[in-house]
Image (cartoon, rainbow, N blue to C red; front, top):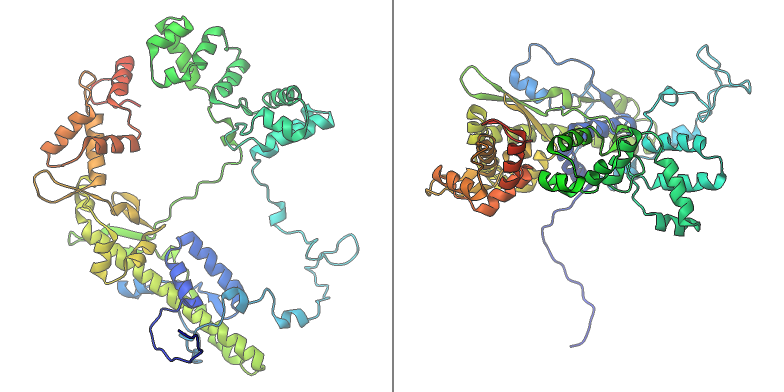
Length: 506
């Protein structure tokens, strides 16, 4: 068959991922913190966007308040907006440069007003030399800086400082040395004895236990500082696997101590810090801010509302757009792109808020038993059920439920918490939620008697009598996921501690 060139005309349909559509998809799966940061960036780049500082009207109806809290657009003045549906030719990074042509052409200001500060050269501070508030703020000392400060005091030899700096770089955030002595010696081309000596010096730094290569060494360093690392304690520290198994009989034989002495030693070990480095440079815990509120209403149902505090409110300044249209072709093209972008951003924010509200309302409707009676009445639920109920695609529901939280009378939960797999019923009736089954397993274990510890097989029998058809390996998987020890370990723990009935072992 001969190869020839020819021209064909074909017609088809395809989904074009324009930058605006990509932005809408990206906004949908953002958390409220990520959304606020993104809107702040857009406010800096787009001269037509403004932050709406006005409070919502008190006389607005509840429906208007909810819709108005959706980061909705409010157009100023009466200039007609441009067509928001026009596609952008390129991405935001290519549309908006770091500075405009007008900024580059403008001469530097030389005014010496009362707010100008003179530097040592007699002029104003340059941008690089300007004293900003951020430059005066203090930051928390991390573990690396804390150890480096002690290294400069403890080591005067430049070679030891170099080795110590290398070893400090190998210490993780928990305070453990991640690399071996041999590897460090080969990399630095020094004898292992020298690296070992410098490591011993680092292990004497604060916090005690830092620079250890194992948990046993970390605990031993802390006990040595307290002068409590005797041969019996060394035997216990050297057999931490027996301590983890709570094999008291074997530990007493290894350490050659009585049961009372062993109990005192274990109590002392519990007071030690297995991760001494975590108290330095810890990231501040970000509180969970709910995106949706669920409240009981007077009719006995539940009312779903958006958290307006987490929704950015922006305005489009069309007066400025109308005033600057006559400044040339380049300015008109730039401002038209800015207006299209602003309109699309506000439309995306509004659609995002409405979609979150719609998905959350359907979740509350599907899981009404949970809100009334608790986790035992949580139903099996997947993305397809919600998507079909609200006429959306599963991927859209998945993006909406990512990083979103719902504040309910029973606590604050991530939206994905309400989506659980199903477990068949032994009686052929309605299926059970896996989360509810896990709750049943925890209740059974917490209520077991020390003299009658429930095995996994026994738990299976009890659950099947209540109508839950579950396999033993599934019970074991759920138990391990909840960090509950096996029946053998729970029996040993409760016998050693003498726990009364109904008290769970730690």
